[in-house]
Image (cartoon, rainbow, N blue to C red):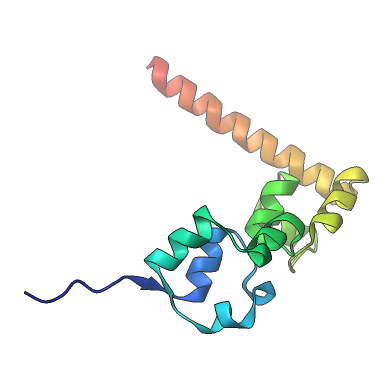
Length: 124
């Protein structure tokens, strides 16, 4: 029998699973494969750089979209194509531009329709 090898993932995959923007991570993280054990340790006991990135950003687009309560497509329609910091997201939420108001309403309508269809399916 052969010895069991440890699984590893590319830095981009690990960054996506950790919810961080890869270009903002330390160079050593960007340049090395991450073993499953290292990944689990990052999740359970995050180093200071990871905690700071999660708190202050810059955040990747999926995280920006979640924090603004819009879709990723909505971000693109609003002209947001780059990562944003927590301060930039907060500024958008405090004084929302028209595109943000429209995209939030659009996403709320989509979610309401999805819920209606789901509820109708349960009754049938």
